[in-house]
Image 1: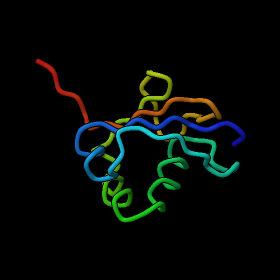
Image 2 (image 1 turned 90 degrees about the vertical axis):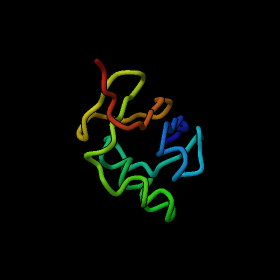
Image 3 (image 1 turned 90 degrees about the horizontal axis):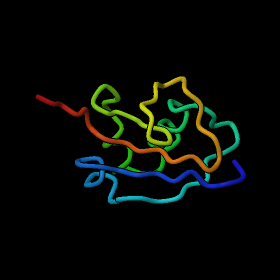
Image 4 (image 1 turned 45 degrees about the horizontal axis):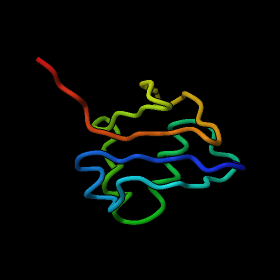
Length: 87
């Protein structure tokens, strides 16, 4: 990727990764949400722990809910957060 992806981490994902937000430059072959999460998981123990249970993580790309196969492009904003409940 030529431009960075802006990552935002919320709730316990923020605690485990040690980041609130950061800009990352994933390799060119990272083109989907799932590939991005796999790449992030390899960045260290905190990331591996935070991303171990994918069912407990929701992803938004440019403020729209995203699924594992959805694309991620340079310049996108990707937010990771736990499931939100309402009532």
